[in-house]
Image: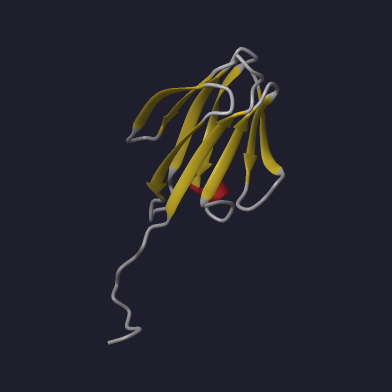
Amino acid sequence: MAGADTGVVLRRLIEVDFVNKLPPNHNVSVHCKSKNDDLGIHVLGPHQGYGFQFHDSLLGNTLFFSGVTTDFGHGVYNIYTHRRDADRCTKCLWEITQVGVYGFRKDSGSPDIYFRWA
């Protein structure tokens, strides 16, 4: 029957992308994890990117955190939390700069989250 409730619940696909915006000859390492997944260490050269995808939890408890290390500083940050990001982005962009990490919401040219280096 067309339009009938099938009882199927679709989980949203989330995409997280990092871009190295550091000056030439400066790499960045990114190491992302969740409670269940360790995505490993990824080294990005200048203007290179790294991204991953996952399905948001139906329970609303999804959390991915990432350690970011540069010559300018380092830190561990909550890169995706369901509570903060479920309505904020399905494609979450993070730019790594000399002063910290900037987070951009969907279709926005301006960052709305900023993490300074430790």
